[in-house]
Length: 300
Image 1 (tube, rainbow, N blue to C red):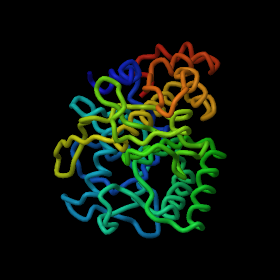
Image 2: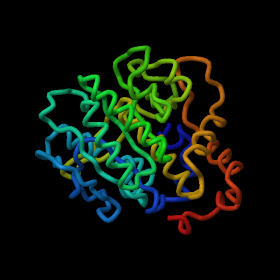
Image 3: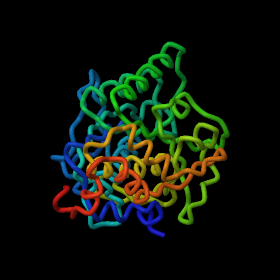
Image 4: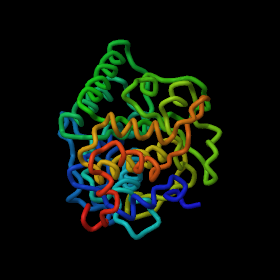
């Protein structure tokens, strides 16, 4: 089954390409901004003291950042999900190939700074397709404060649960401002290496994460699997919801997600049902019943 159909995203994708006013903070690796599949005028770089650029076309960090950006913001009409290409993408590169990690990651302190910068830059959603490396207690406190800051400013944080085959939680996934995401296969069954846990099962979402196609450097298409590539499906769905219902608060979007995925009795979260969430949100937001049928051309 196509990933957009598996997550019941197709009705939303058919109605809107997203809105420029809905900004997604992409905290990841650097992105190949010259890729022909991306629309440059929908992408902004968040200013940082030490900007990280693609070290080369074969850079693992650049490959990862470009892939995740493509899932969200690629031009439509290809095999790439291209969920919300007309939303604004705020790029905040946070890791590079000097980290020595096989899985994209950063310290808690580095992530804390990036979270605050994206919130201050106007992000309404943050996409964290990464893992935490070793961090000091002080850095962990800074990250908790940064996630608190995001929640206080009505920013929804969507984060990969990780691919370590563990049952438990992390500093990120147990924070109440965060929606953890696990990966599932084309039938909706969780991938065996996705991390699970009580907070993940209670507040998280499962999303397509097996053999997902997206952009790679040098104009290529690549195929990856894992929770990192599942996370943009949830981020993108929320971006489309906010595009259709611009008056919806973060609290109401989260309430709609909870009410549309009510059976939470295990460490495994339910599969994303984006259209059902849209219908629930329509009942929560005054006047949204009229907007849900608006043609895509009027909402882009």
